[in-house]
Length: 425
Image (cartoon, rainbow, N blue to C red; front, side, top):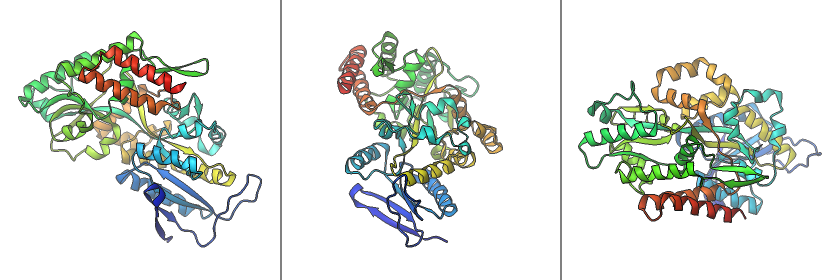
């Protein structure tokens, strides 16, 4: 049995471990050079808790099957923490060989590195088995720069105890449109008789806003003449901003408390919360109330924006790239990716996964996961581009200004658009 050596990466304030493989040490190899006896890969990932441990077990299985490759695994923290570390590592020339985090394709796409487009031609990978909509989430400026890994959508969770006390059966008659949702949520909130109970909130308003915009016929940004331009100042986008303000004005959603949304929900003080589908693995069977879920309400059409992580090869050395591809092929094959999805609450990225007996059985027995799977049929991927992180920050500022009444919804969105345009110039 191989020994696992724990190491600390002080410079990045992160911890990791190495699957040791003897005393041989890999040296950098040029593309035309001989293949080294041992290739060591630095693998950074933003997969925490039990999900992280499951990923590590899969990595160890790969390690056992590939004596010519050693993995140095490093958990790099939350998505935002990882973004900071990767950006710094690129500048210092210490970037990882494999990166699994949110929008990892930004780091290769911005360098014009689309080598993965050649990797996926490998017949063993079965590229055509990847779901088309999910694949879009792994692109940068409409080119493939990574592969989908832990893909999720927001799910509308609800407190069944509060709903039943109000005489509302959401299993038989869930609200479909946002207008219907407001009516139902308000009724349950009022019936609770508790001033501390709110009707709705979300842990990620920017993610939800993107879904809402698309539901109302707005694409958030568009590619025009080879350049990204924001389009969320159009009339259909302002309608969404006005609706967001109405949630606060009607006292259905508290202003500026999104960081505490999930805590309020788990404490029983929130009727509905929009949160990532991977909460299924954390919340199911662990709440003091009966947990339920419905599909996300919509405006003109059903639509939910995808979220989650992608896997990217950042290695520039030929043999490290080849070893990195072997790792991605392994963790993204049907059996391994499906097992990760069922364990974590993320969604299967392969068409063949949905035909597996384990998946069908799990979906049939899990109300929560069945909702997430249904939403996959109308999930969409917004365009990823270099200033996307800045755009999200501008959206957060705009939502906060809207909720606090600092600016009108129209002005807040126009200012956010202008800030993004300036950032991209």
